[in-house]
Length: 121
Image (cartoon, rainbow, N blue to C red; front, side):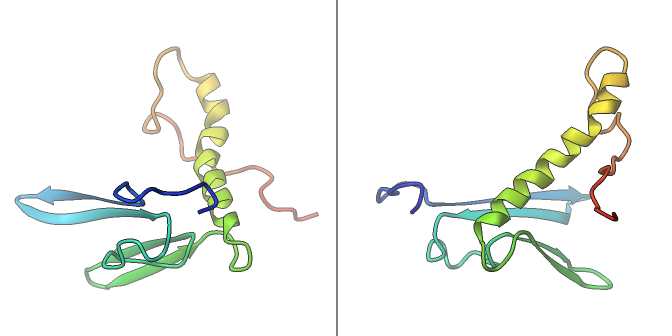
């Protein structure tokens, strides 16, 4: 791997699942899978590098694959994901500065939209 050798008998893939239950019935499940190589844990769900998959088993049934980065530069998927993660915090700065002293959570702040994200020049 580019990050180095992953010794045998150590962790090269991680899968976490969280399920919300209402009245004893599962209503939402969030699953997150990370692999250091595509041949690890092949029985787990997979998608192309940089893909976030949303599946809603309901009426209507919905499946959405959101791709980050480009096919020719897979490392850009990680860079794009980090940018997307940081956007919420960076765009919230003016609201946090204007907030009363104390802890402000995402529930206390408005939904933010990026400024100058499009070059319409």
